[in-house]
Amino acid sequence: MPLTPWLSHYKTDFELARRRRGESIQFDGLRCEAFDRFLLVGFPPPGDDSWRSVDVAPIADTCFTMGSKSADAVRAAESDLAVHDACAELVFANGYLLSERSTGALRNAVAAPLASMLASNPDALGAYFARVARVDRLPLVALNTALFEDGAAILVPPHTTIDAPVHVRFVSTGEADAKPAMSQPRVLVVLGEQSRATVIESYAGPDGIDYFTNAVTEVVLGNGAALEHDVLQDESTTASLVTSAHVIAGADASYTSTAIDLGGAFARNETIVTLGGQGAVCTVNRFRMAAGDRLVNGYTVIDHAAADCVSRQRDWSVLADRARGVLGGQLIVPAESRSARARRVTRVLMSRGASVEATDRVAIEHLPDDDPGRRVAAIARFGRRAFNRVRTASLRARIEQLFERHLERGYA
Image (cartoon, rainbow, N blue to C red; front, top):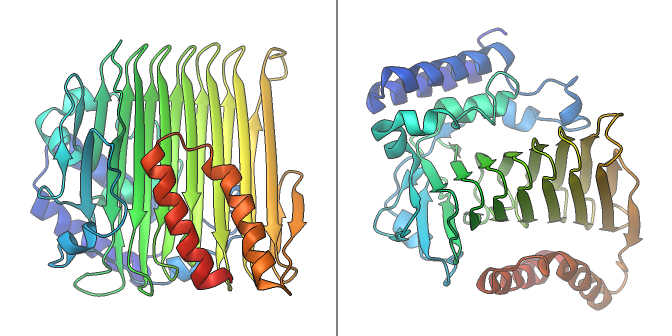
């Protein structure tokens, strides 16, 4: 596509970062391939079915600049989303590791900064990194692969159980050499066969600041592995956010994901799961809430690529005032796969001035907008159906606190 001003701006950011990083030939080549793909395709075009009815112009027409190392980052990282029973915590601000805020170490596994792992041991990660989230298919994955500064690598060997959660925190301050800022968080999770772990990702930023977060997570589960994957998003309600998880599960593996989206003027949560081994199971729970004129967008693809697989999807959305929801996805089950089991339930609690578009049947309940007390009580009951799916007690308690804060500020 033509080199528009915003593409030229991203190209400058890419070249400056490339010179500064001085990465290996192998990894630099992957970065260049990813950025060339993004230059060719650009942001998702109107004809992209996975972005149906979603206008990306507010993001595509803005010249975002890579976030900078911020003097306020340590203070910002103190403020919100610590998980007190985590065995290890990696903290990033504007995409940069905050080593002074990162704590803990795993005994028989690895939770480490992704950039240093790719630099020191590229062969160990080469079979996984950018292999599940493919740069040739998804332009925002390509953009993240080209520009991400750092992220988390969580590697669990076969037959290993991590009893306490591993927490990866991404904090945005909105600081950049030329605002508005953007960051490209990245997470890679690899569980060997018969291993067990819980990974929590959280995203936060001060309210009232405009920035763009484009996060990509890759998950690889060996045969019989089980991952509990929780994502809490409490970014600025004026920010633009895209979080995407790309998962491949081996035979008899289990992937359970619960994502809670509380912030964002535009917030998209994308989940793409391939059940690649016989008997693989996935459960995808999603809760999102928006008020005012905000837009929330959910897109989930579950591919039953092997026999005897099971998938469950539960989706809850709260749309207050004039908020808009666009909910879509695909369930891919081969015609010859008679043993597959799949279920999806989508529920929306909404004001009469709000709107929702969905590819599946939606159970709609209306908010009692004429009575603020009843309205808040209805949203609280609705939200707790999703929060009860979160098994980590300290995270569930923190979600409840943040949820109450949002109810007081924007929904009462």
